[in-house]
Amino acid sequence: MTWSEAQEYCREHYTDLATVSNMTDLRRLRDLTDKEAWIGLYSQPGKDNRMWHWSQPGVEIGVINELFHNSQPNDNGRLRNCGEIKNHRINDLKCENKREFICFKEVGSDKQYEWINEEMTWIQAQNYCRREHTDLVSGVDQLDDEKFKEDFKDKENLWIGLFRDTWRWSDGSNSSFRKWKEFRDGVKEKKCATVDQHGNWESDDCNAKKPFFCYDDKVILIKEKLPWEDALNYCRWFHSDLASITNHHQQKWVQARAKNASTSHVWLGLYYTCIVDLWFWVSNDLVCYDNWKENDGNNDQDDLTGAMETDDPHKWFKKNDTEKFNFVCATKAVKNPT
Image (cartoon, rainbow, N blue to C red; front, side, top):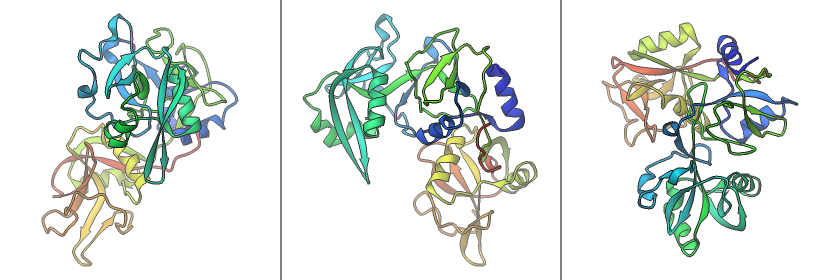
């Protein structure tokens, strides 16, 4: 099917065309195909449609404007979509240029930074770091790390994991994960993305006919504004239940959807029972993993239901069940794309 036909099919029979959030997702798709297939990534060409991202999946972009050199980013007459660091300040640069670069590697709770004394394009540097370490150095926190500043105070013109593009996901998620074979942005006749049997991505004509990957989501954001009990009934009628969060991975999954809400918080399947003085999930799980705002999980007779803030850091808050918020429903378990 064409990309649009594939999108329509996936939305009718599943949730949407596949979103790829990390290397685990990518390996799963790679192992299921022996030819190029559509994924849910498409381009909205235009200089003003570009958005900055970090290479490391899940790292929030943060406040980066103050990290740029004066007058940067400026394109300087050409599209400059990748970031280099010089004197602890960022310049925008053409991604096809070659630079030395900085990888990082997660070792337990610690991060190790590695200077690679070999010039590569930004994409080549990204692939190298992911293969040999974890990724290109990514995020404001890493750039502000005193160890990072000390280790690289005498180094200049090094690639970091900052890039911008016009690509968006069909399901509206904000995953920054990319795995391009070559970095190409703004090619008007090639606005849809494919993945091949090696896990590499290419852009292609959206009217070309190809196989495709769909996915069924675990959770879905409902942008209606309802009180908690009405949200619960809605989820149970149309889907499965209000979303429960019992571990860190589920927290990440739900907060990725919550970012697109139109209210300050989204309802979760979280409620307080006075009889036993405990918080429970509507799935009947006791709240063991939690992400409460400090001291907000304590008993309060007026606020007996729980919601997640839609902005970072996505903490949980006690709320009165009469307040009206968007909400997150649990749906079916994820299925292998077909």
